[in-house]
Length: 470
Image (cartoon, rainbow, N blue to C red; front, side, top):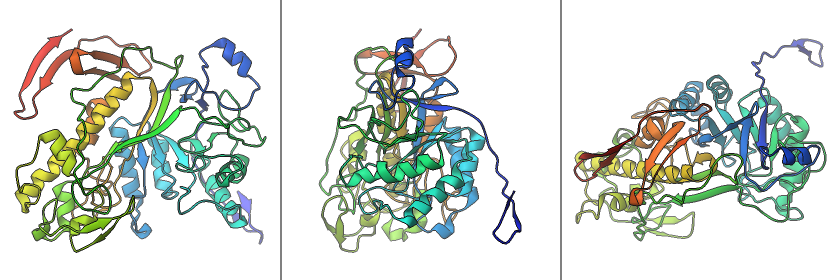
């Protein structure tokens, strides 16, 4: 209980939790390293992983963007439901992306209640909204950290999305100003330069990345302990994102597994904090936002003329040109070359089929990507992204979650989200790939024993053939 300047009491009630999260960049399974690192500052180059109360964590989840372009539509219920969907799909971490916004209290409350950790960018992404060391921005940063610091779900604060903090350059402000302010407000959490980053040369404890109060400085050399990408973009139709020309890619099915190698915190490792594949949303989500005559991937209209780089400009009237990424290449890679006129066709039946193929293609792409990563020593896997901001050709595994026409509170699950829950993010996975190579991996805290059944699924017919059981 505090008193205002006028003497009247001000009461704030907060739920707090206690845990210790270490951001580990050295081989802390080696007692000699721990002895050498005690009292030292900076980051190692062995890898990047989190320990919660001393236990190494296989971090799995996705990146969160704002739930709606219109903040007046944000609701506590939608944010809570979105987090519940993440937990139901076996997530244990969400990253709040720096190109979005500080989220409502309901999001952080739900993460606390559901046991999800939060990797939290400050709300900067360099291109378009980089920071300046002003009193106003300092006050905003302090307010944000003071508002959120009681939430035990928040595990890591970092400076920005993809800004590559280099001392003595314009991006040095993330170390000298942004994260210095954050660390002065909350010394109980690991601080990190950006997402992705190679860590610090000073200003944090080497063993856990908690701030020391000394100047935060980034190293000149950059180790690849944290990665972004690759991203499977859509192509084949003129739109504001993606290439108009069809660009096919290898489906990676059966997946190509890396050569067998030891895994775990004792071995060099990587934290993958962004990668993903595009997909449209379901017919139920998309159709209410389009006139029935436009129910088709190409809207039944003449293609626009689109030009430019990442942010393309389109001239024309095609309504699907504004729905971010097309899906032509995704469908053709996983389901074969489309018959003449198929992707131009309109109508409910064909639009349902087009959208479902697009959604399955995303699910297959991300599933094979994650299964290959889990065969390597990647101890953090955060997919780009969790949620959609509107019904479009986006990256989420949850559809737009504002409960307006056609939408489900918190976001309808796409096929990819069902695969997360069923197998992809399970503690124990069994995967087979090209040439009969297989692996079983247990990322849980306890030993397991059991039998493995291997089956083959033929896409064209749906026939499942048993291959082996061990």
